[in-house]
Length: 192
Image (cartoon, rainbow, N blue to C red; front, side, top):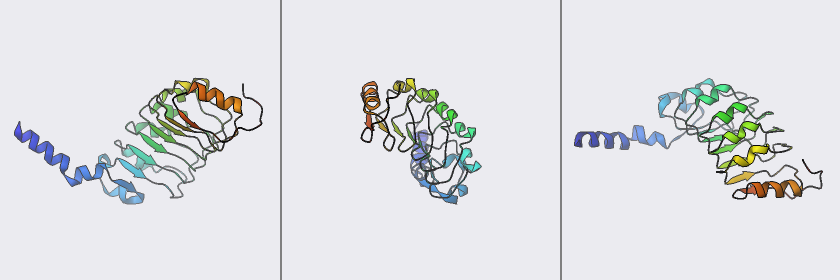
């Protein structure tokens, strides 16, 4: 029993194993380590037009930052990253919310700000572990009816989108435990 405990302690405190659990890999440095030892990957500001295929080899990824690139679509293979808790797709060139992101039920933080989405799919209701959702300047016209099922949501950023006072009041009531950030209400027509 003591030998097993010593082995666990050696593995746990081994800098080669433990140190990488907290390391954020960037650019090409993630290519030089075993795929199962990459937990955090930051590929922001790389002018990427698509997500490198190698990213999907990192099955232990907890956080993935792809912000400030030129990505126009997200491949369905992103669903293979089942350990992913934080995903940042902000400031890309997405025009549609990828519906298969709704299958990533472990997501706790999703940042998809400053993309020209227009709408969210109804399936977003399945992201029940979502704590933070950043939709800043996404050109949304409305929120799906079942959006209120996101009961774990603590923070929702809807700034940079013109919503009427009635719309804002309705969603503040439906998501009464969520801190919702809106801009000042517009004098626009009420959404049904």
